[in-house]
Image (tube, rainbow, N blue to C red; front, top):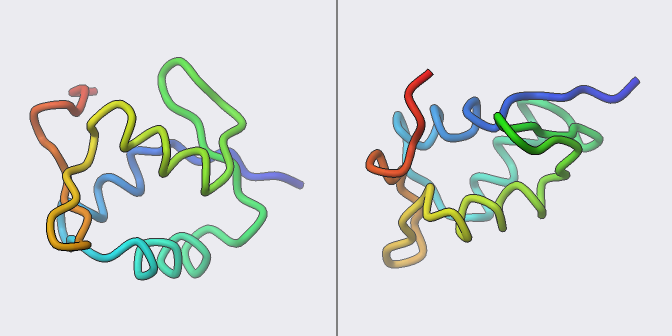
Length: 78
């Protein structure tokens, strides 16, 4: 059975601990598994690659020197 996890769970982790993309992918696999799908307020069914692309496209993250940081200015508050 597929899991649909809210993407904020990833962003919340980045708030606590910025990390490289490789570390982030390892965190996602360890925390949620490799078959997980993510959802947001408007989208659903995103795999890991798609959700990470979404974060970049929507400027939810700032990548500085290869480390992903949460962009608090672009996070919805709910």
